[in-house]
Length: 318
Image (tube, rainbow, N blue to C red; front, side, top):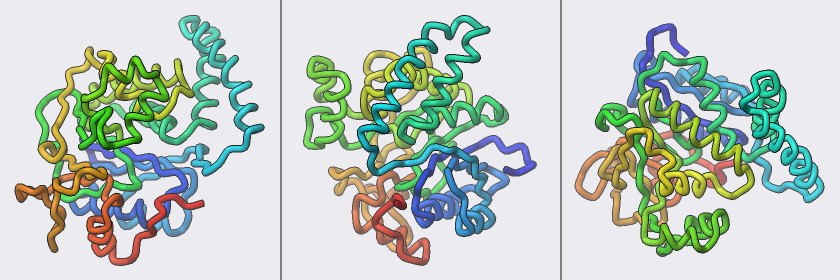
């Protein structure tokens, strides 16, 4: 990170990621914000020579995590994992308000989760830890890395709300299968019925003030600690959203492609057009942030050309 008093930071978590995906993320961000304006911090499990070069060229600060993405976990490993985590969880939640015991059991539980849980969950604890020792930032953008690219400034394209969420073109019970399945698997059919017809808010891009993001992370991390294996983080986030879990934080929800983020899920073909000089919304606005560019061949090819060499279709390295 720079010695300047930087007010903005972009945070990403990229374990086992193919380097070219990370380079798209870093290169496009630096085309928008110079290092003197915005820090870029990415947490990863391995920094090889290629990533060192990316860090040097695009002013990326890498932070280490031992957490990795596993394509498969055998039954014995999963059984061993749960047999240790469940009693540790009970001890942690039972003693979290007792200072002399909290430092042992609560912190041990958090550390075990950060080691063993899926990166999608672990990243939020990592962001929380980072912000605890970096309170100098005024604005924070937390983002997926594998499928996100930047085209124009975004920090100043929102109002003064403490927190900003971004819709995708997905409704519970609609044509998109996965979000509906995830929510139902996590919370059951009765809970699912309460959100049918409502939008599934995307957790892949979230922005806010330091205060708003810090408060958001405290709520989300506390919920993950209570129910670590309930399902996909997207469902946990939306369940909190629809049960007023974030109501103590002033937030704004942005329509897809109206706010600074364009999320191009499978149903979003009518949302964008690819031109020689960028990806635009259908009304001619250059989209500041593109999320899920790898879902459509046209946008995938555009950012591959921008990078200058071919991007692997597989975002994760085995």
